Length: 172
Image (cartoon, rainbow, N blue to C red; front, side):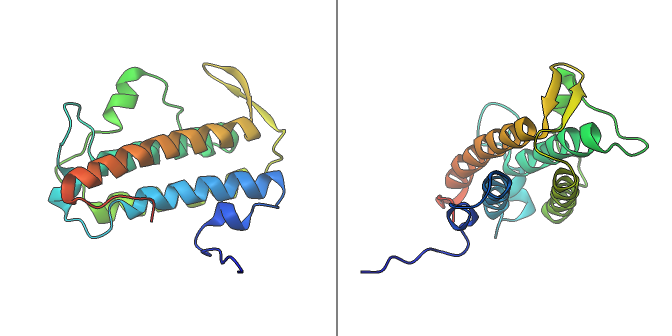
């Protein structure tokens, strides 16, 4: 019996690809999973606090928008005004939502940040090393692996929050 592969699963399609294809497909998969957690939710549901911390579905996406900007463009191809955020206060604030922020705006900002990250990451070799304000030096390979870990971890948080919201769970 021939096994079929769901074409939406980039990591499966890249299973024999080169290192960059594998890394970027896993990162893009987890980015997409995160956004799927918001699909069909109202702004109120996406903002709802369901755990003791300030973590919300929408706040997770806002936080990962900051993470995308921090790691790829700011470290590898900074533009005027780009500042690498390093404090605990910056990290906590990246989850907090302003009164006017909504699903559409935060999703749009996240998609723009991911597109910029993809372009920047694609423009440099995996072995390219840059200074990091806290870690010394990091390679593009290390940044990609770190972003896979960070995005996957928060996608898991989002899955739990979505399940608590309306019972829906799973990667797809």
